[in-house]
Length: 327
Image (cartoon, rainbow, N blue to C red; front, top):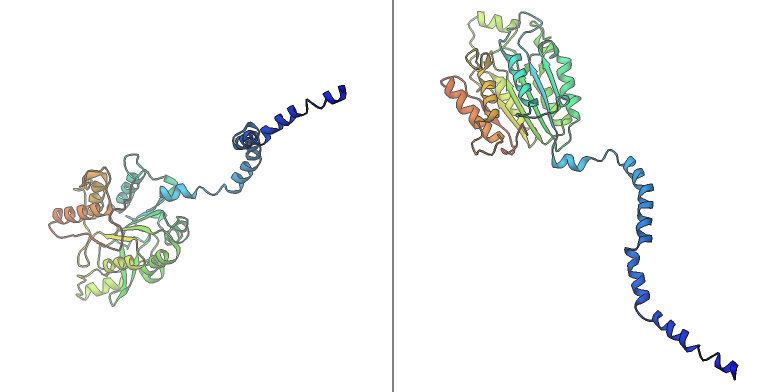
């Protein structure tokens, strides 16, 4: 009978097995999501895999770039030309330098200096200009902002050829404009095929004469008068390359650009008011930022007024007037 008494305790283990049916095991399975063993596993996995992923995805700081666009600029200013027969300009290089200074200033554009290509006088060769537009500006992404500024001479090919137009680089030859100048269609090609940005501002002060070169000298001696500057119209045609391009020129197609010491001690009137506008004079809505809509309105009005309607800046393009050059 003593052996019968031993089986009696068996029901008690059965009672202990009853909790297996209770939710306690389920409760222990629920904490698996937050239990210490799982937490220790996750860091172990992350410590091995995350560095590898970070190394693989090192070039992926793209999302922040989309939220805060990178701003790029090519700035060209030519006052003195290698060929002394090409008419010099008093303040073109100074205008370009002043525009650069505003772009990199903490209170201005706050551009990274390495994101600006500054070509002044002897640096503004036809080769360097082509490299800047075709290769260097191929780096900005679609969502970045690109500004192109040019202050210098421009010219048609000849008095009888007003369709082929050129910007004059530092090393242009007076008696060979067509083969040594920078053709306007190269700017079109750069905007169309090499500059990916959807936000491009082109600012030009290039309308200082009706034409440069020996053929124009002969034409003037014969009494021809060049009262129309086709360069302005050609520059504005660049805005039709694609949506997002804003082209601002210093004057209309029957006007020429003025420069004098009366504007800031020595500037072109156009660039002088560009700078004043960017520094806050054009901030009409008082939001501490100057957008292109405000800037072009301000510059056009004040240049026209200050020159007594001799010079009127013009703007064209399918662009967002709320876009800004500076930050």
